[in-house]
Image (cartoon, rainbow, N blue to C red; front, side, top):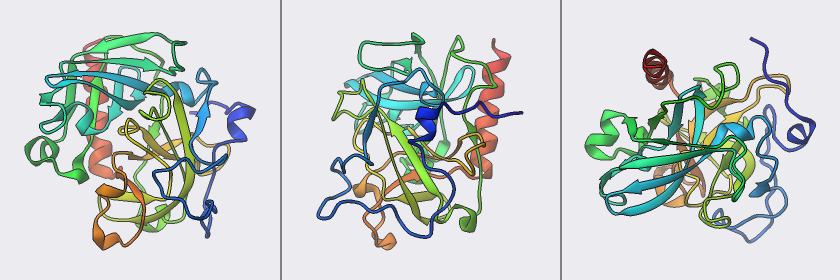
Length: 267
């Protein structure tokens, strides 16, 4: 299947391929700050591919409202962080419902919004809130796009992932109050069997967003992780100031395919 061509404005922004050195960040700043023109850039052309595949989440839960990010992996299947659909400490359990807005830019919703009350997550997240399994699906009754347009996912070896330049997109609480899409880039710095770690700027609200690579400029964007954690979620053993994402590994690919097939069967 031929990849959807990237618009020129997107080509000029996203990072492609690998680099043996990190993208240089301004001195004396931490990962929780906006790091200048190359980091945490607001995306306003949200109707373009692949930005349109990234969705703002308005979450209604037992303990109130929250925001998050999701991305389309099937016509009626979004992937997000597990803690966006189920979290005993922050949400009070399962979300009641989530409003999904594809390609949102403040009040502008070029593809409309859809509401879902059907969610799935992995057993280790549900049972013990294991950060390595902080992955979930939101199931939609109606599609935003066809299966030709959605994100691909890919499982890569440690050696293949190391030094890949990674793009991370999402809807942070600050800036934008969960209504503006932001994007940043840098290099994958470390991997563990179930996590990838990168020095890419993120903040609350971006949980669930895609961490994706382009093997070359003519390839589909491939999601390799589900962004979920800032510095506080980085194990001390990593020894780096990095943010992280549960990693796409073969069993995660299999589970995502299972969720997509189940949604297609109910259409």
